[in-house]
Image (cartoon, rainbow, N blue to C red; front, side, top):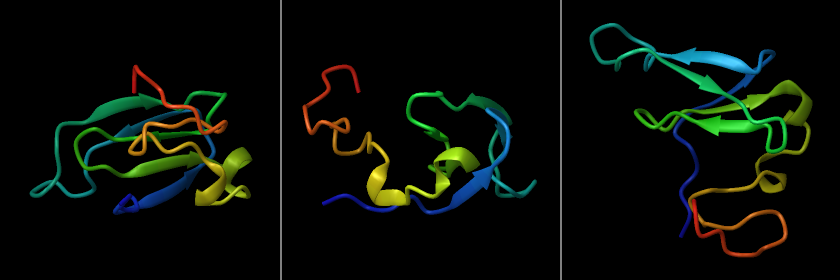
Length: 80
């Protein structure tokens, strides 16, 4: 069973910073690059999902999901 990302943010840039959202309960700031082929990235600390605006209209169903270990073709990925 795949659980949805706890927080999804639509962004306009391909490089974003994530710090968990609050100083007391957050995490160290990390810089994330959104791949141009998938259009999204998950923060490894807080699991927030950042989706580039160009891919946002696809909706969650149209995006690859690394938690399932599959790509758009439905083939299993060994490296994910």
